Image (cartoon, rainbow over all chains, first blue to last red; front, side):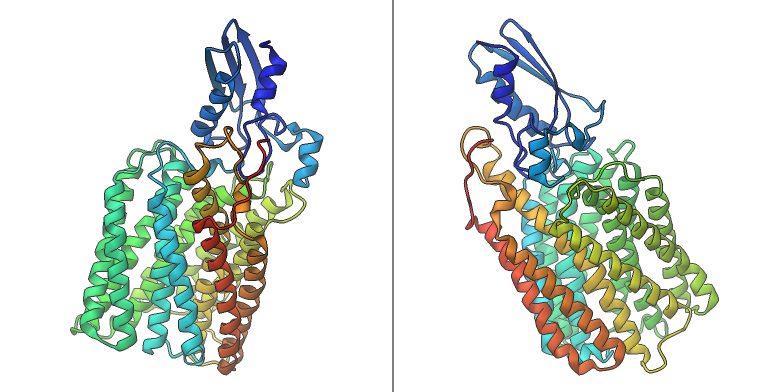
Length: 98
Length: 432
């Protein structure tokens, strides 16, 4: 069933290849909107002006469109509020030694 | 994304930067072999000796310039959001530069004027092509900020360094420069070290050092001042060198460079204080060592510009100490440290980015053995400090031993990057 939990699970397969942590545990996901078979994700990246967002958008869209019930997806990268390590889960912070 | 500063759809194919950087790493090994082979001669300050000139140009052109050009092909589109003007020009320039530098250093080593002139002309032409490519790329930039100004300044000084180099190789064979030869050589070194290399490091370092240290909340308001002072100081110090002015006026002309280095050191210290990772990564430790060498080299250069040198050292040895600390310490340590991140990331991008999320792929850091990196830092640090001390103390014979230590360090670094490039150490991980 398509809901916020299933979307978050799908987003947990998208990870930062440098840090080895997924975008959910990194605290990059700001919002999820589900409208029928369309899903929109609002997210940020760890550094403002991050140009890797093209690849990240691509990976996130792929994860979303792999979900049953999703026919269309939209990913919006925002810079406010800015990401800080405090947005990470405690386990993620522990893994990075923060 | 923790490495957002390294890739974008405006970037060229990763082959362009990787080819430059891999070649630069090979040249770094050759640079250290040259230092081992002729260490005591170089350390004694015979800076006109063919061995010294050869080693310096393998290091400055084959190693650092080759790597920075490759890194800029990747970083400038990323940092400044501008599509590279011409990838073909980049590939063509690579081959011309490689042939030119090879011919030039062979000419220096074997004292063959024809090779020196032809090699110098080819290398300079390749550099002009790079400058042209970067200039047209930078034309697209809107609001590049401190990074844009640093890159623009660096490329300008690269143009000046190459032009002065061309004048020097010409002047070695025809009576073009006369008494001005040594002054032009000093300006050539200043434009290269303080201008091209240091502005490149400032421009890219101000983005990469905090990114790799996961640093947030550090002050950024001094960065523009540091870049401005460095550019102004490199220009004024070079001009003063051309005019042959020493003493207080030279000291004044070089003061902005010293001030810029002090600000950069303070900024890096602030970045480190604001880092969120408790453990300091290899790249961060290389950066700190680089800054320490840079401040020391800057202080020595400023004192030298005022006409001061240690009373027990000949002028040649004093100049060698300054140039070696700047090139093998300040510049090389920053470049080596960043390469430990950049090469594995570019390889990962090329090999795994389209597989991520679909199948198990390694992380970037899995692509090489981290123990090689630790060993390289210890050995390069020990060897470089040892060689500097041997030069400054006048015990140039010790350099034969300390350069061997550095060579070992360079070997570990090169092997680690070979692992990453060849994909020999891949540990597929489960998807997160």
